[in-house]
Image (tube, rainbow, N blue to C red; front, top):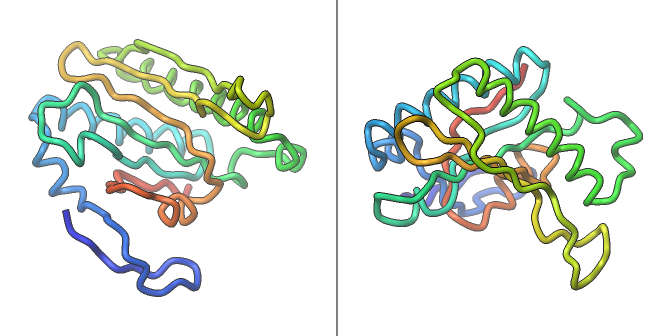
Length: 183
């Protein structure tokens, strides 16, 4: 891992831990690398076909811990102007999360139809934290795990960030930009 300084929205030289994609992919088994690259291609293709903008980031254990890992976590950032209506901007975090999750579910279903070697293994819908009982405090943003016939599962996790630049700025752990889609 390398610490890089990059410029983000009037905050020059903010140190972030961004792992280069090529270095990251060398950490994965050949099967997992092939699966993740295939998911990246299908994600890009599907987002462009649907007219959406966003990004796919690898995060967490597959970057920070020694292989083998039990899964690969990827965060999906869906840029707001590419899929939200004006009324969506006034939604509570929970309702916005549900809206994003429906879009993520649609994208993942298309990916699994385009490549039937991938199948949906587990779905966790967005959930309000019962302790607080408020639509502003979520316990989970929602995720969908897919599994190939071979290799480890890949878990798609939704992001609260409305822009790719916000997602990068808010990263607290090492991350890999797998792809960005600008239409």
